[in-house]
Image (cartoon, rainbow, N blue to C red):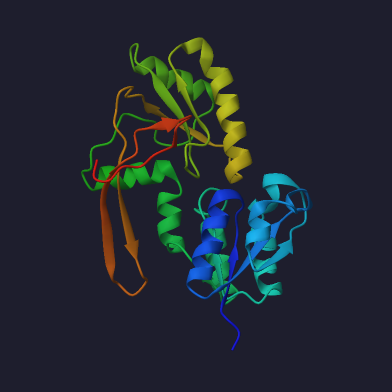
Length: 244
């Protein structure tokens, strides 16, 4: 009997970890890659590989060709890893339409939490404290207006979509806003396919504490306790410590 196949819609370290987990579970793993990633380690560590049209990060952000790759290789599920399409409700919906499992949250949850401005509003509606921030995406003028409202405090420009510390810039001076906005937007567009940014008040000495939650789709939900993620480089976690 052929083992169930999982398409790994990512590259690098996370794709290697997913391939290793598949092997431990007796599942067949399929990597994807554009031509310029053909010799990457994640391709060699999977059981099979499928070429994607295009080059670079953009190839991993095309929902239609990710689903087509999964169908072409007989995969019954798609694992997005983190970054790229991991918070894409469009990919979750496309997998469901194609009769495949999207290994991740439902498209409804992704639509809410994949848009950080919407997630902030949802938290506020549940009386969860949130920092001062803009209600949605802002252009440079909107970022300047928000910065001025802080009366001397700093702010963060943050990508509306995606996560993992990409598309973020600290702004401490009004004259830096235009360049920071351009750089953060370009990074967000490259990483997530969306360049919109919102603003949030900067808390310079905050600790980053997470609680990770896992559900199996049947209604059973568990959590893994709190963990300390404050040791970061460029807003990306280096070490996680549990308990904090």
